[in-house]
Length: 160
Image (tube, rainbow, N blue to C red; front, top):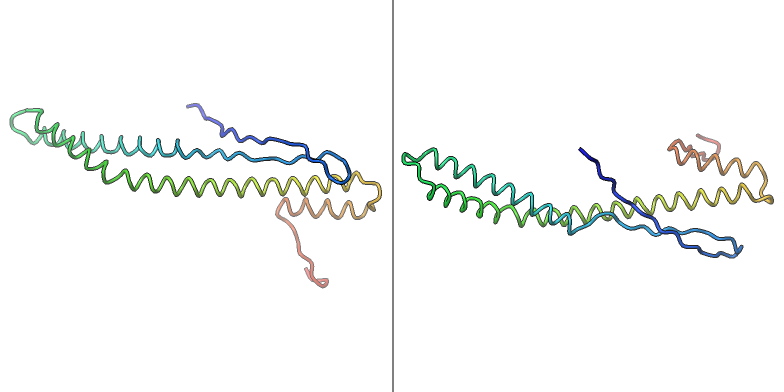
């Protein structure tokens, strides 16, 4: 079984700031494709309704004394069409809602990653700046690393 990657891409554009130093800003392209999601929902509903139609036709064929394919085929097609009419609208609605939710989750994730990258760039710039005292550099770098690792400690009025 081959696993397909998500192909998340970032495009970089140069932005000049007050220091005339090139900065990079990323623009995120959301990998969620609503059309593909909708087509997969239609395929899933179609296969489910065909399976139910086939089971109905098979059960009808086994229940008959004379083995005639006309009645089982008609009942199977009717059961398949009825199942498709019941399942498809709900599946399309649920896929639309789930795709919207996942798009928003990916947007939040990408903004979080961009904010983290921006903070790390700021700390990196501060580390290379000679006018900032060494103790401030170490303190800010350690704070960012603790926050990044989820082990940040908040100190208020000398209490931990």
